[in-house]
Length: 193
Image 1 (cartoon, rainbow, N blue to C red):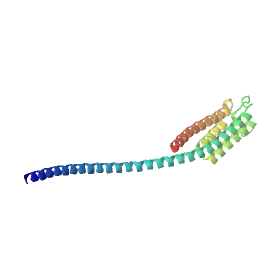
Image 2 (cartoon, helix red, strand yellow; image 1 turned 90 degrees about the vertical axis):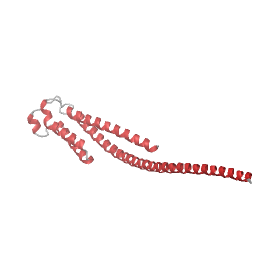
Image 3 (cartoon, rainbow, N blue to C red; image 1 turned 180 degrees about the vertical axis):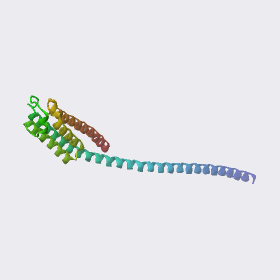
Image 4 (cartoon, rainbow, N blue to C red; image 1 turned 45 degrees about the vertical axis):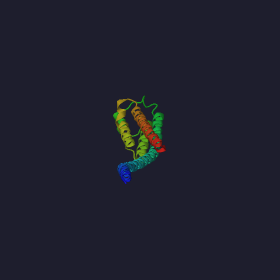
């Protein structure tokens, strides 16, 4: 009987030890599960935020691409008009330097082919500014008008400054075009990922 009692007592101790080990393992597993569930929630929140950021970037890039196409068309029209204005100036101002100008001629209206050319250039730039709703072109037209009125009194080539303004405007438009092209390329690259 003592041996049976001892055997059962040893078995009970071993079973109790196994029970304690199992309880400890269960507690550790529950703790790991709680940590994993917390990590899962955090990961899901990060995923949702990343998806939202991606969608925002896509929308922004798509808008940027559409704006770029619209801007390209507008710039193309501006560049064509400015090139035409420059061509008219170059064609009509060949002899303008050799002419003498006075205050009477400035205020008296169109008396020469050069005056007509100035008027044509000014009209074309104003029309383009109105069509394109371009403040930059409207400002250029204003500068051309001021030069046409007051620039010829100094005896210099009255078209030199106008040509310079047009060349400056073309350069500015080309720089803006390059910047927008770079931005569009970046967006296209990001959208392809």
